[in-house]
Image 1: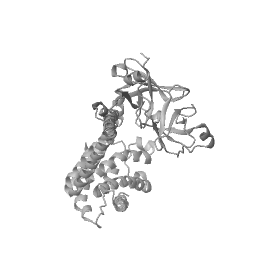
Image 2 (image 1 turned 180 degrees about the vertical axis):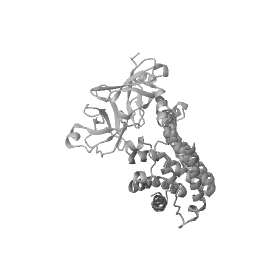
Image 3 (image 1 turned 60 degrees about the horizontal axis):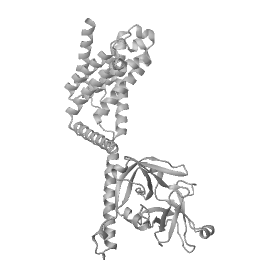
Length: 169
Length: 276
C-alpha cells in the first residue's frame, strides 16, 4: 500500500514537472522532449504487463488533459508500456528478473540503463510524433523529430538521473 | 473453440494494448480538426476500396448468370440481323414466308467435349424435349462447332469439326472470292484443318475468312469456319488444298447455339422424294 502511494506520489510529481516545466521549455517547433518515461522505467520487472499499460494510459491521458494534446501522450505511453516487458526481457538476465529488479543506473549500470531507455524512448517518440504529424507525406520531418526528440529526452533523463545518482552516493 | 479461447487468452496483452491505444486515438482524432479530416478521408478511401473489391468479387460470382443472359441476348440479336439481311436480299419477293427467318436458335451449354480423338464428339445439356433433333448445326461465339447426331429427351451429342474420315463433311467457301470447297480434318492438330476441292487458279492469302457455303440445310451461308493459315504451296495447288485454322477455340468452348432450320423437313422431302 505504501509502495503504491509512493508510486502515485512520484507520478503526480512527474505530471507537475511536465505541466509546469518541461512543456514550457519549447526549444523549437516540433521539439517536445519528455522526462516522465523515466518514471515508467523504474517500475519493478515483475510489475504486471497489463497493469503497466493501464497505468501508462491513465498517466498519459491525465497529462494530455493538462496540456491539451488530445491523446498523444496516452497513445505513446501505452505503446511504450506494451513493449517494455519485451525490452526488459532482452536487457535483464534471468536472475535479475527473478529478483524483481528496479531498473535504474545503479542496478543496471549507466550504459545498460541508457541503452534500454533509448529503445523505449524510440517507441514512445515514434508514436507521439507519428500521431502528431498524422501523415506519411513528410517522412523526413517525422524521422528528424523522432530521432531528435529521442536523443533530447534521453539527455534530459540522463541529466536528472545523474543529479539523483550523485546525491545518493 | 477451446483452442480459440486459449489463443485469445495468450494474446490478452495485445488486446489490452490495442484497446487503450484505440481509445487514445479516439481522443486524438476528437481533439484536432486536422486529424479529424485526415481520419475521415482515410476511412472514406478505405471504405471505397473495400466496396470496389467486394463489388468485383460479387460480379465475378455472378459472371455465369450474366454470361447466360448475354448469350440469350446474342441469340436474339443474331436472329434480328438475319431477319434484316433477308429483308434486304429478298425485297422483291412478295410472299410473306420469304421474309421469315428460316433459322431459329436454341441456346445450349457444352457438358462434355473430346479434343484428342479421331472422332471428336460433344454433349449438350439440351435434348428433344427442348426441340433438338439430329442434323442440327451447332455454332459457338466465334464460328461453327459441329452437328448434332443423336438426341435423348434431355441431352444431345454430336460431331465436332475435328473428325477424320467421312464423319462430317462440311461445304465451305472463301469469303473473298466465293470459291467452294469441303472441310477436311486430318487429325494432326486441334486447331487446324484443310479445304479440299479448291480450283487450281484460286489464290488464298493468310487470314482470309472461310465460311459456310449455305449449300446444305444444316448451316446458313456466312457463318465463320476458320481462317486461311498460309499461302498454298505448289503441292497444295495441284491437290486442291488450302490450310485453315479453326475460328472456334474448341478448348475454351462453353456456351453454344443450336440452329433449327424451319424448312428442313420440307427440303429433305423435296430433295429425296423417295425417303419416308
